Image: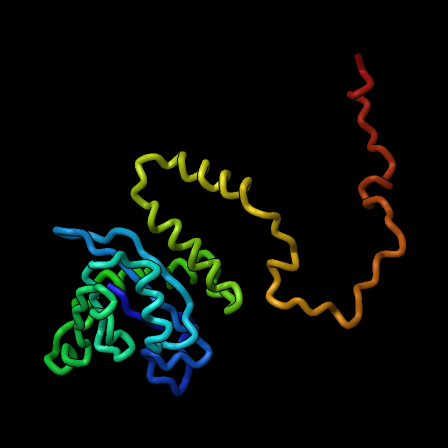
Length: 209
């Protein structure tokens, strides 16, 4: 299942769906297992919902020859020409027939709800657009290893990534590279805490033998 939606809070005057406004359009792919259940997922922020960005998203995360289930968005047209079996499930037709739209793409709605709940709970909803990709990678890493039989290997894999990864500096983490116009003033004097300047307390029992 490969649809796309927006991550962010509700905004006045927007009908929802792909009218993202200040929200971030995000591609989401969920592996469907047989006879039931969901496997791995992949998420990536997208600049727009055009075929020029949706097709590379599918080819990067879905194996050729697999069956790709999407909604009726026109940006997914042409996936059958890339070596996929494309099935389109129109959610608008489900609304007209008074059907539940979540039944058309159950895996995507489930993972999207978990991601939004994780963002509101762990990060209190404060996820900046510049760092959203990193947060989504963290969620995907946790979700794909939720049923791992060797949980200790997750720690070893994280440690291995930290060892082989290039050093990450502060300027690589901040959203802007612009220096401050007025640098902060360093403290003039470095004194001791007030607790160290007090006279010692009278504790005679410490001197008794």
